[in-house]
Length: 400
Image (cartoon, rainbow, N blue to C red; front, side, top):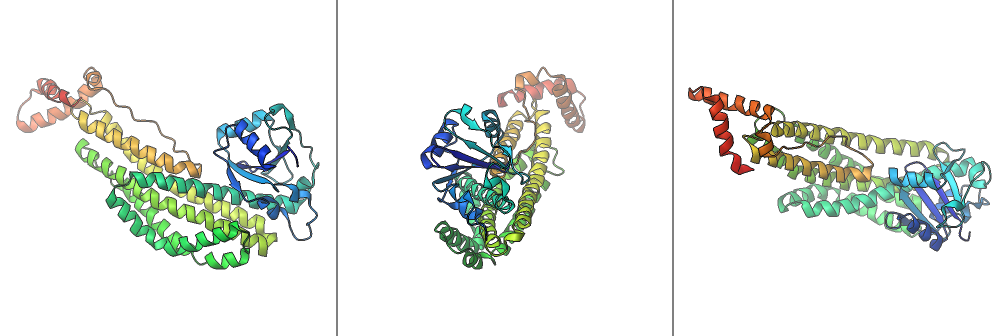
């Protein structure tokens, strides 16, 4: 294979295969070395071999090194600028070959039908399966790293609550961990499937419980209009969101690894159904993402509405307003960190808070403060609203 590198992509990620040093040079050239996951030698060619097709030259692919890079908009643009990937006869799969890593002008155009890899339908179906596996393994690795970061942010009480829930997954986690370890050493797919096939129900049960808990977090904000109430609720949600998302991250990590073993099993025992099974697995992954996005979007929608209330009440409630907006921004950061491995983006506009001195010159802020002071003045039997606004506002200036 020499210095040639083969690249195979399904739009979500790209496999870079070739002699180890050449692959590393290519990744380093594009600042991807730390982001690309490495897989055992021959892992790609093993999947590309099918019954009756042992003579396929795909055995030459990834004999030395196979790396998987999750595609971001930035990395996808880099590949496009460098020459791009040509579509194969399999929908969604693209392919290219690079001659001399480090020289982007050396990209070779791959003619349709120029290689056995591009002309054999069985091989192309196998490519879809292995790309799906790589994507799930990459997601699982990112979720592991996320769990470490989340653990550092949880207080002792919430960490204990999380561990109590995750204890329900201990048996499933041990079985999947053992299967993945044996798989890395070339274990038998059918034997590995026997180890894990009964473990998915526990994962799904904990996942359902956690999704319900996420939905309940959004309901905490319902009906709250006073800044004092919103401050308390925003702080509670800020703490609880890390608890629930860390549980969910563990569920997703285990599901990803479970699916890797499952696809191995289908590939070994029913290869003709592999393409359909893989599509079903990917549809299930997308549904999982949609479920999370629906709940986290609802949480942030409610919190952002609370943030708007806080932003409109800076004059009389500067301290509470800062607390509310600070909590919702940290909650948004936690959610965005969780979304990243899943390839999900939460579309929202940041809530901005005026400085107290700026709010003092803002007509809407004065109007809002006037209404509140007027209500309080009415209850006290006085009509000195205008004076009351300025008096209360001045008394709050120390909260800046």
